[in-house]
Length: 54
Image (tube, rainbow, N blue to C red; front, side, top):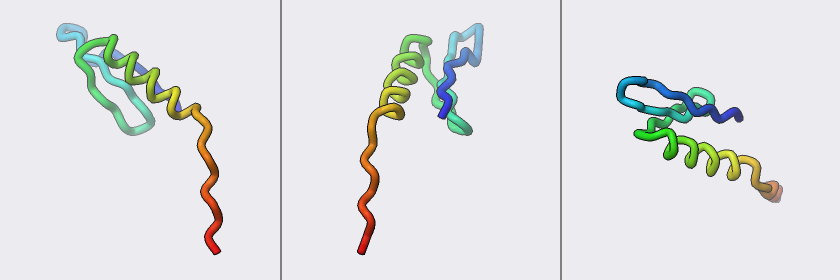
């Protein structure tokens, strides 16, 4: 999944983190970049395969 940080309102300085069709707004670029970095690290983290039922 691609995580994109964008400025959405230049006069007010609003930012968003876009992930597919989901976007999350932030007041500052710093907050947006911190969120994006945390999200990317969680996406890249190893995940165990679910065990088969039965």
